[in-house]
Image (cartoon, rainbow, N blue to C red; front, side, top):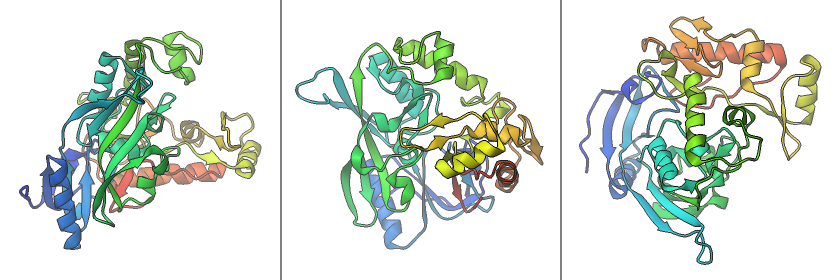
Length: 354
């Protein structure tokens, strides 16, 4: 069993650079070790925080009163074609501790299409199905074939097909019931193609100079996405204060017909995306800016990114989680007062609530 350390500060393990000490801290380098550590802690009724890349996490200034298990498993295996009759597809099984963007870079280099628009997203592979990570018209639910999990309720290891993962916008069954399944590995079904999936995002299409639905070389799609993300401070960069964030802090609200009609009365002509199920998705960034919170807006040592209003940042690295949450509440409440819409946090809050 891996060594356990006491009092390890968690701030260096999060991209926001916040978080107090862990009562106990350890690392797992294999699937078996990861399962054994968590199973033992569960038997002892010890609280467990499974830590990936820390890119979607806000940890309390008081830290975590339990065991933090950092996932350090490694391995990428090309396992099989999508079907015996179709050699145009490949299945890639990736351990939860692998770096996500490194995997995307490899997929682009190998000619595996389907995740190229998810370039530059910080974090580890294991977090991608939990959050149903998405950007620029792609999300992982489009390519996830199966997720290998440890079921903490039954004590068994098994594979969940994509249909059992409950994928929705920035959501999944894993996020709905966070204490049950621990992700061990993810299998992606990817097309063998030098071309991207159909470009589905207007901003990306404009950067590439193509129409919506066009397919472009994988490397071109990746570079365009990276350029867009850099312009918003959404690529990890130690020299960019705006990169000290948890990415987008709020999800885009999805409104039912009555809520959408009420917003239309408050803000005629507001931007919106009409969804196939009759709901309406509203850009949270527009709501934030038009509620009076511009880029660079500060509260104490916490700040809205100077590049993108969806990101709350810790520009000096000295802001505590409490300061960041105070800014988040101010933004959330201001948007509700102005537009009658509640914003929901995207990062996982540990020891905190919005």
